[in-house]
Length: 160
Image (cartoon, rainbow, N blue to C red; front, side, top):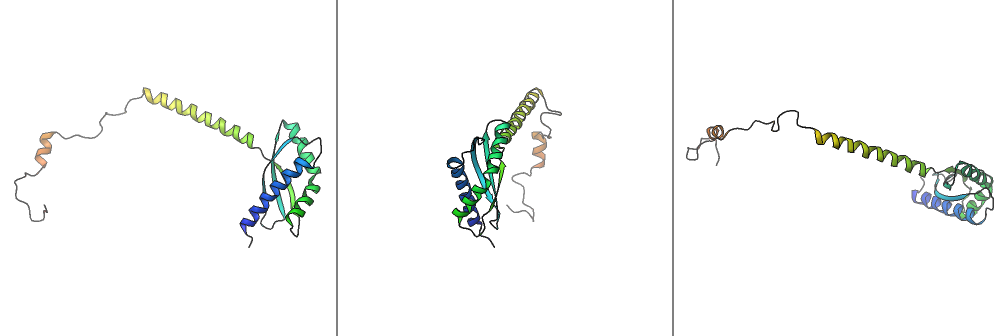
């Protein structure tokens, strides 16, 4: 059984190590404005997935992916030495498309706001389908007939 806290610590350490190595040791001109956002490692500590974002267009993302792929061996050896594990985890780099997801969610929220405004506009013009008071209201005379008199004798099963 693997300790989940240990796995989380190793994943955080991998994220920090990869970020510092990318910032200081990789001198590849294809590497764009990169941010290492997250790292996840399997429970057996053999495979690590590193998520990153790149500032720029699709060409910058493709060139950064190529630069990371070519530097994967150096990054793996650095991570393996720093973690002190028996086996260095294999690294897989995945482009984190957070900005695209944020834009999609913003578009969905804008559509929901528009739909809500349309519903409120339609509701302001609407009226009740039936009577304004759909429940039967008894008159005072009918209610007085149903109430027992205050001076009446209590019946055998009544508790007062």
